[in-house]
Length: 215
Image 1 (cartoon, rainbow, N blue to C red):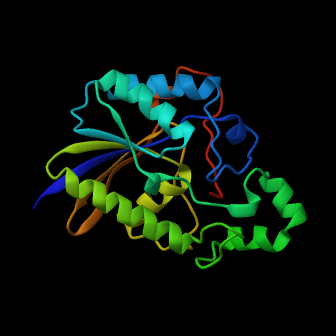
Image 2: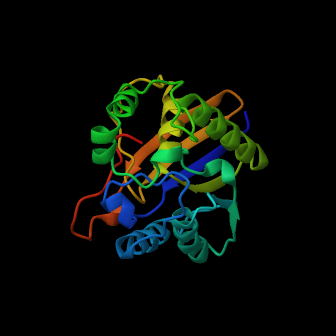
Image 3: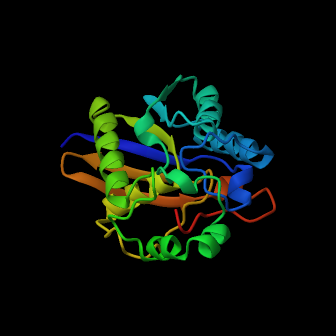
């Protein structure tokens, strides 16, 4: 059976991560910590045999992928299918602001209603379809090889759920830390989980590892 090994990386920290501000498709760059995390992740992957590096075209993912690409001597290939979930009119707001100004929206997010989509944004169903289609497309290009995919919290959440056959509405019990290293295996039968949430390469820096629980 032909398989593709996928190393999935969430982008490094941004100022909006620190502020718990919703980024979505807004193009927010890494902050100083995020650049440090990207370099540490690159060092952790330096010895890996990687056929290709794919990334979301948003700056925070591109900058993280560029550090990895430099360490591995590979170019970065962009794919819009790896973008974060679109949050429409709520991009730029904090979770606290939404809870106060739009309690019905906050409730829909907490309940993870699959068909709910913010105005101008994506539902969980739409995000899942986009992510799974993109991963299948990329994996088929590299049968028998390993690739690196640099994306966002919402994208990695869908990868985990697909690899563990977890329902969209199941409460999240796994982490989606910035610059974490996550490993899945793709085959014609679908995705399977190999390893998740590795942040050992980030432990020399003091401070919390951020995890967007509601992404």
